[in-house]
Length: 264
Image 1 (cartoon, rainbow, N blue to C red):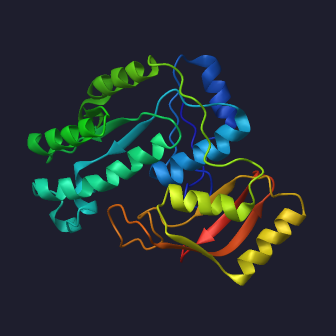
Image 2 (cartoon, rainbow, N blue to C red):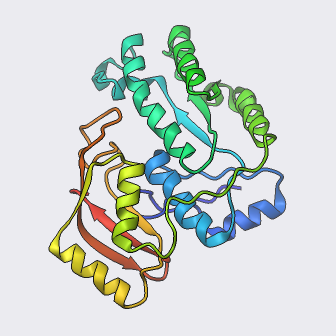
């Protein structure tokens, strides 16, 4: 069963609750994509969808590529096919941040290395070694070239993780926290921002939504998916930056408040 959802940088990025419940009724294991990494995708999956459904994942998978790690390590797009262990090592800071983000929710993720034809064995071994240092299992997957057979090892790794017991539910924030504090919590714990700046308009909107009785809703952060900051050119795992909130929108029907950040 395949059921898509809205983009994660402007919405929760997950398929519908109805689809998930239908799949759970018909299958032993249900895989849901919570797109755009463990900052925009997974955070919203847990803090919005899981909060409203009472569901909680038994396991999580962080998908990475050698090419993406090189880009996060500063390699130009035109040179991503050239072997570069140093760039992979530098870019692994980004992978570590996504792993740590999932650990904030009490999950121990499996890392899937989505293999490209020009990836070298040395680069693959390095990512597995770095993951082991983080206490995480990394598994190469070649489903692009070999179909289902290329993902059997990954599937087994996920099943093994599920056998470790159901993780404890850990949301980032409680329902009764003020909306501005929910935004600050996500900004500091997931994006590792040093501060959050609200425009005058955003402050008025937050006050209005709370006065209308929507202060209990979870928060959806709308920002670029290309960086932990609001600047898509900032790679790796930046810390101490500012999250500028220019406006806040109420999605009353969907059941969350959207904080629009940066130039998105």
